[in-house]
Length: 261
Image (tube, rainbow, N blue to C red; front, side, top):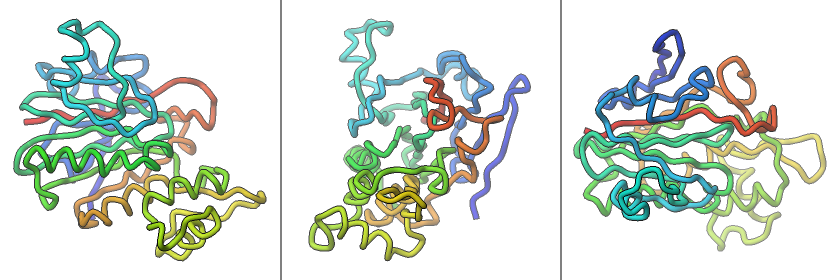
């Protein structure tokens, strides 16, 4: 089993995964707010270059080179819209922010390359994680060398959505032969072992485990469950540790970052 560990920096808690022990990384708690990654990189590797994007709940994954090219050498100019970053060289820190969505940090044990992904329900429906894996493979990674940690996010038990939204997300792991309507897709999802769909007392609503859908996407790509770790933490249920948009409707975020080597 993969283990998760709390650490502190200046008495501020952040979480790491044993699966990513080769990399300086962290899933940072709300206690770090309002610090930016440019400040928080000191916790991990002070001399690392920091890269982040303007998150838009899509499925675009960029490299540091692509981020820099859109900014024309002006690091303070507008960040490009994307929801994932994959490193190209050593000493690059890639960062995403989340409030209930899933932060994924990925490392390649052979190349040292890393990725940071923001996967909410919309990004998950649009297969942002498979997109990121495809880019890593194009850059020389092999599936068996990837290690993937899914950080604190809202759990399925706490995440009520419409059946329409659940089916839109579920369509990312259900072939059109199996289901092509909300009803048929939901039927397939509910039959799965450890289904990402949980019952909700309200008609037309279900509870949706977005992290579970991301894991199923990874397994469909041929990535072994041993290469995947899921943080045993829920942003919604742990107000002392995490911001949750669903809980408070406030635009506050916690950051997650990982450094390539």
